[in-house]
Amino acid sequence: MKFLIKILFVLVSLNTLAQVGGSSIYSFMNVPVPARTAALGGNTIGLKDDDVSLILQNPSSINNSMNNKFQMSYINYIADINFFNLQYCKSFDSIGHFGIALQNVNYGQFIERDEYGTSTGTFTANDYQLNLTYGNEIDSMFSWGVNVKTIYSQLYTFSSFGNAIDAGLTWKSKRRNFTIALVMNDLGIQWKSYSGTIKEKITPYFNIGISKKLAKAPLRFLINYEKINKWDLSYSDPNNPTSTIDPFTKEEIKTSKFKTFSENLLRHISLGAEISPGKNFNLRIGYNFRRRIEMQLPESGGITGFSFGFGIKISKLVFNYAFSKYHAAGNVNHLSLLISIK
Image 1 (cartoon, rainbow, N blue to C red):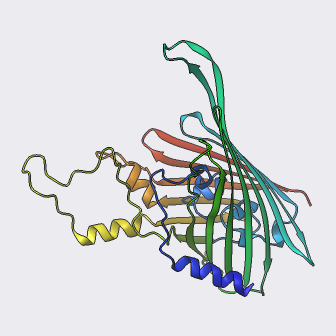
Image 2: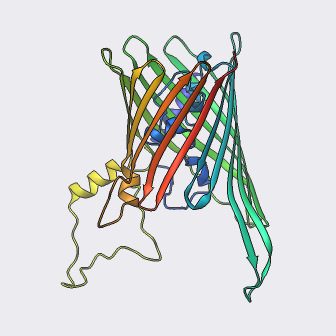
Image 3: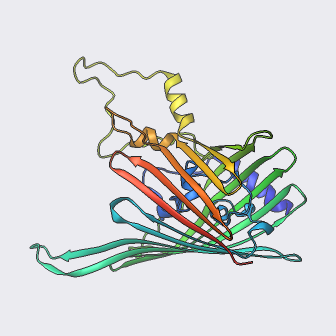
């Protein structure tokens, strides 16, 4: 266990070659599918309770309160792409906690045409991910966990196969209603590339998440610092680079160091808040700075980057819903149903 902890902190300190802007393979794994996660800004690694969906981002959040719970999630994503997710957790007193999750991304049906534009049939495209999770407690406050991911992708006649792991460490103080977690995600390798020759990278990244529930109010706050192993998350299209010369004055466009620093810092941060006005009802709101900076229109930002949602518990069922604003033309609805089999 000490070895695992040391490895986590050593890896965090490395300046890895993490890239953004579409240079990492299997990017579908980073889409927040469960409704609760989506509503809270897309990141919930700082939470640890009975919600089995939390282990998708943080395997060290797995615990006994997730025992015999099953969850189904669905989102109708942008451009009619559909995400499906199934999860189940089981605990054993003498061994630890186990979880399994299966995710499918269906990109729909496409018409195949030849060089003359004549239809020659149809084809589909899918991504699949199988997660096996194990975690256990170190003591009354510390817990650890690991996700082992098997990834398969089928795009037209091309296919790819790979494996990746997540490793997490969580500290939770029940007395202070405070949780902090450190997670390494997507350390892996592509065994078979789409081309069959050059293998693409699975880029690992590290997140820190914190949550705090107020002692005298039904309110919980979350703050996450994402991709801590890469400072500059800005993206410049190599085919359409940002101009550094004013087209009218022909002078160099200067950007203040403070603006550059603050924008880089904010790209790492996502925020969330969960209000529980009743025992069986929750309201949620989230804000993702990077999503807003990258996806808002120049003339109008609107609510791009914001997300909203709620949860309702009825007996052994919990229904969660989330609305995420990715772009002016990109509204996403998330649906999740949690079932307690006890």
